[in-house]
Length: 407
Ligand SMILES: Cc1cc2nc3c(=O)[nH]c(=O)nc-3n(C[C@H](O)[C@H](O)[C@H](O)COP(=O)(O)O)c2cc1C
Image 1: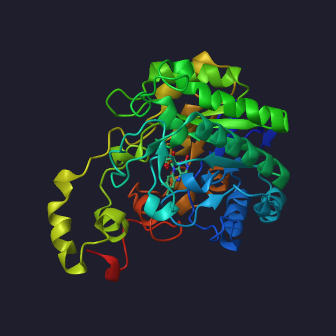
Image 2: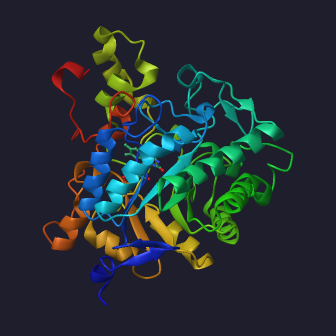
Image 3: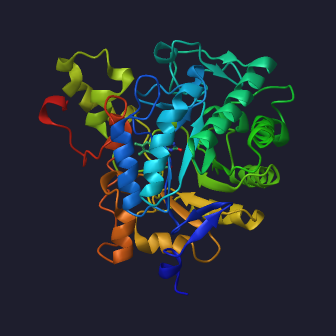
């Protein structure tokens, strides 16, 4: 069968039946209510994605504990049984619209701000994050780690009770599980640090605890194949981690890369979204509006630029991971054309392609691809979406803020 057709054929991840191989990757929407429950607007967005023929919808990251909540407003939460009825409704409407839905579970660790969470930030080791420098995180104790393991598995229990088709552990982009996995942020000398197996232990224990509580409910994981940090994650080790995930009963591994401190590494692009940064990033909050034009002129040399290439940047890593495991591999990162998506699932590179930004500008991009109406996403990788979520719910800004918000 030609690969372009194969991409639109039904496929499976464990017990999850997908109508095609194009998945909406976890994307923070900033559309949760104050208690972390999904809003009506979020339900409408997910239904649009499902009607637009996304093979599956992975939610924006949902917090498992208040302590690990995002510094961004409107994060979904899954830390309380009281949230289950609201999620049940949401899931039913997505299923009616024809797509399975997977909840991404996360703890931000040191990539958040105590000023927002109201709790001291925590991490595997008491090291400041290179970007979130306000807080010196507290090193997690043995009993804190057990509390986090339970929080992840309790959240999975709630996800299943809500009707979700599976959960995904957020082990990429420098959040808590990635902080444990990476030797850059995990300097522990106990059984949670040191060797790869020790740094993986928290993930293994979460997998075990989920299996104990919910049996063979699908558990996916998103991991970093590499990051640009000194002594950080490297592909060779990520391959071993993928193998360990498979052994631990993981249903699929999504391959990503980068941490927040690298700037535009997770979602790459040709230009720093300067106006958005100055308007929305917490580091510039205290700058009076009159100084913003000056800031705009002097800031660029101090900002990290995006690594290159901007397209298909995790594909080679996905191929190496796929060669080592037999569970499905999902690849994400700059795959914004039908041709690139088709190439990604051919030649044993990956089994599924996931996308984030193309779905922000066009929630029905998959249907457009299938109908042959369009073969290239309209996303220009301006990345205003990624910055403006610090202030407003998710939307496409097409590289432009309204006049009143520009520096
Ligand atoms: C606005 C925005 C929010 C994101 N939120 C999440 C998230 O909650 N969880 C996650 O794993 N990745 C998140 N990402 C990263 C994307 O899932 C994806 O890995 C990255 O954008 C590269 O894929 P793309 O080129 O298809 O956008 C986010 C990206 C954007 C642009």
